[in-house]
Length: 171
Image 1 (spheres, rainbow, N blue to C red):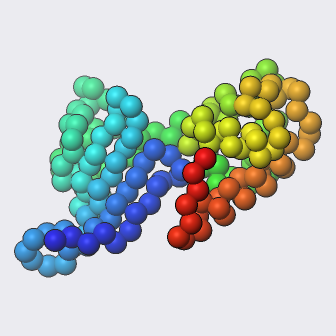
Image 2 (cartoon, rainbow, N blue to C red; image 1 turned 45 degrees about the horizontal axis):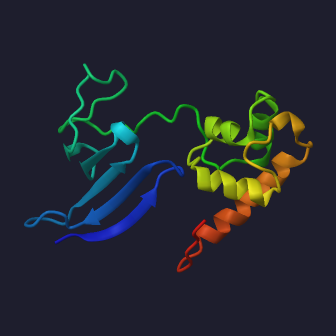
Image 3 (cartoon, rainbow, N blue to C red; image 1 turned 90 degrees about the vertical axis):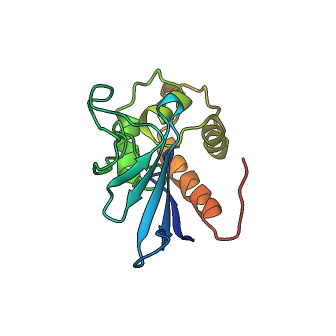
């Protein structure tokens, strides 16, 4: 039997990696990783060996179907594209301010967040908006200059809350 060694959500995106040790029934100690890509009709589950080569996957996707990446046994695993989005918990204040300054001012907060960051569920964005005392439908052009700083602080508080071992946070 295998033992779960590590579980990680990648970049606050819809990717989950579960690393197993001793995943082979007989033979030497080995590792493998189960990758769950939860992306609507593009969802897939893949089993990788310790070098990142696909052992098997639920959906076999050849080059004729996807020009960016193939998901076929025997090929090296390539993660889905990130579309230039940022992990909201890894963003630095300067980068957050730059992203805010370059935004189309007529966008509302929810659309702006989804366009720029991973993990933009309705509940998560509503929680962030409430933390900085705005609504999700407020247009960026109506916000004051300090809103990116308040957002950065709210992200830090939320990250601390959800990453504390043994604690659960439900929006």
